[in-house]
Image (cartoon, rainbow, N blue to C red; front, top):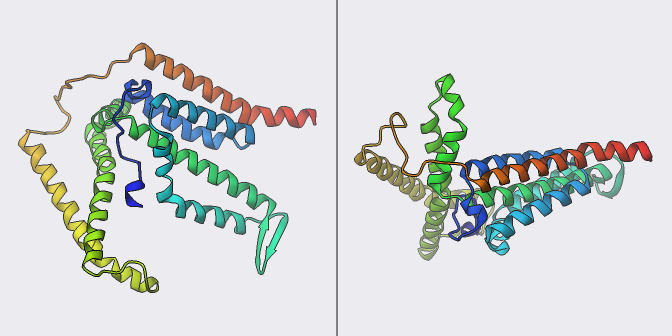
Length: 274
């Protein structure tokens, strides 16, 4: 289960999406997440699904690899659906003891499930097609205007990139420790909630020790290479927009324009005719 989380991992291959400037991919990811909350109609979600399918196809990342990352968050998805399904007031469709499934709750539950699914897969596309170094450079370039307000842009971008990169590393470490503890007789499955919580102690203690050790090794490696922050630093591969990057921005603007039309203008037009 832990190995199935794809956020933070990089999939090595050659594609148009891989060659795009990281700034384009960061802006596109943010815009796609925003678009999911602009649309609230079936046609809007179909448009979002088609756009995501096109990007996945161009990225040359297997679709099965994208879907694999959904298995790790299926519990969060189910909790979100159940809460919206039973706790939203409205027209009652089905009654189960004191719980009621309403028409409005069913609609919101489906919308939230679709939104979360597209959001997770869309975010995974960015990390799967962007190396940690390019991701750091892209974040730093996009946040550069914040330097006017004395924000340490380079340091913030570096911390965000390191945190994102450590996700798959710590998950792999957790999987190794869990298997080692199970081989020593640890039981993480049986018992009530309190017993399961106590059983996690032999897992969490070595995991935290390993995380601190890795952080210390990283800090020492950065100091050994004379890292002193972003002031006066140059880049071996500076970010320069290419023709494909401008085309990417144009496609993104067209997609957002269609989302606004489908999500906001189309319901008004349909209501006027109906």
